[in-house]
Amino acid sequence: MTLLSHTPFNPWRGFFPAMARSQVAHSWAPSFDVQETDKAYVLRGDLPGMSQKDIEVRIDDGFLVVRGERGTDEHADGGWVRHERPTGRFSRAYRLPEDANDSEVSATYTNGVLELRVPKRELEDSSRLIPVN
Image (cartoon, rainbow, N blue to C red; front, side, top):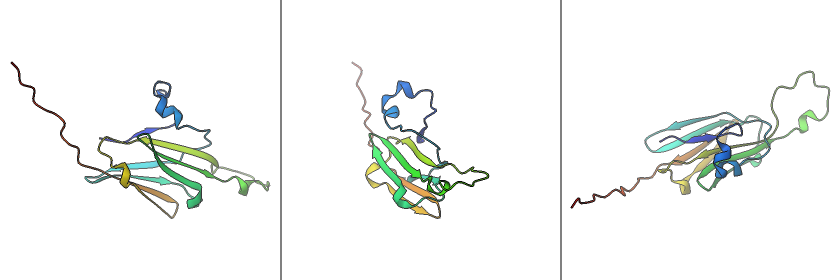
């Protein structure tokens, strides 16, 4: 099963209140790659120029939520000829699959890349055979 991404431009968000609840005003959205291995889901996001204290990762009602803010202070002094790097707040949310072990999620931040590891857990087979009389 794959992780489902939620962005502020999702046309279905009005039908799913839990998804809409995790939204805040957005200035930009960092790119994330999502990989599924036999043992985990691995997300890698590009957050260049940010410090760890500016990044928040949380589990919220079945979603893995990444929020943060890349400051605008460096652009306050003016004199800029061109400004292409986005700044401001961002929020990304991913619905966790049923087999995600949300109590063992880990996060590392190295060289501007945030890596989130969501281990998988074994699902119990809840099916049962119903005898036909």
